[in-house]
Image (tube, rainbow, N blue to C red):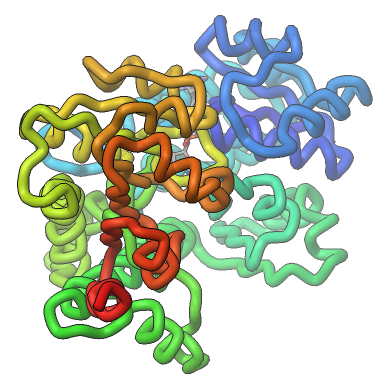
Length: 442
Ligand SMILES: NC(=O)c1ccc[n+]([C@@H]2O[C@H](COP(=O)([O-])OP(=O)(O)OC[C@H]3O[C@@H](n4cnc5c(N)ncnc54)[C@H](O)[C@@H]3O)[C@@H](O)[C@H]2O)c1
């Protein structure tokens, strides 16, 4: 079995490496020649735990290769996956399908023999049909089927998610395409992964429904956290109290500065656009989008409050810029709202992130980038934790206190214990646990 991955980004590279680990011969294609060149030299363009080893292993085994030449890659391929970006379209929030449709045209021009064209990119319902139309129009002679196979991996645990997914969704009404997909996913059938066969539209919708539901859960607990702050509850206890109910579940009930990343913000927005257009508006998701955007903007005020009401002339140490730990991805990260707002309010920023600083440098101005967490704290009036990297969970609290000018900690990820921090002499603020902090101080 030989397959091609068009687009070698977070999803294409991880999927390509994992399929090759399953024993399939995979060629990853990208238009970005620098990306392909660095991969050929064994350098990964992204940070993802364990990916480097997996890629190296499969290159050495002769099952994984990289190229910019789609035509060459397509020779003998039984399936081609489209894993290109689907960002928000400027202005209206629809998914921008330019890259998907361009890829479809390029695939059409290079297809030979029966080919299964699989959209792995997250695409609005109806896109698969349009991909089929584009290919059919460009190549009336072509023998092909289009399948929707949305990807559910999470950056930071992408390999485990791909190798041991909760489920795989395969949308097609073609029995022939289903057989090819069954073959590609054979190792997952063997470990009894639930594999759901649906039609194209259902598969496309399932991906958006999943992301919108998870985003809603996060937003729900964030609003409960706001209420806890006002009326005196501990959001962690509330989350546990509801999460133990199996109908609700414990995952995605951790409060924070608002969801970011390359998927939830754009996918929730795109779903609301699809729903509006279809005449079945999704008011809940529309509200989630709005509440989350506002939340990211409000977070700077939370930091300012934690600093006593003003940051004019103050130096703030910010730890964590990526949208979550274990990735170098800063797309729609809360740090991108928080840092400029603090600067506008008069603060100087000293920053550190374990792997995201190269990207952060290109997106944020006037930040003093530091070698490590303690370097960022050196001479700062307050410390703000924006991303919960493991190394920030285990800071030497006495050293933090000695290094900061003032023992002020604003913990936007609730990774420290309010009572312990208050007992250690910190002015500590976090999310949805105000009473816990206040009581400890008294
Ligand atoms: N990142 C995630 O965690 C994640 C998870 C699940 C689903 N998805 C979805 O997967 C898709 C890809 O996301 P990503 O984060 O991997 O994007 P990405 O931006 O990291 O990668 C996309 C790649 O496609 C390449 N590309 C674009 N057009 C091309 C073409 N015609 N031929 C060859 N290469 C081309 C780009 O150069 C880029 O390297 C999106 O639809 C996204 O919503 C992403």
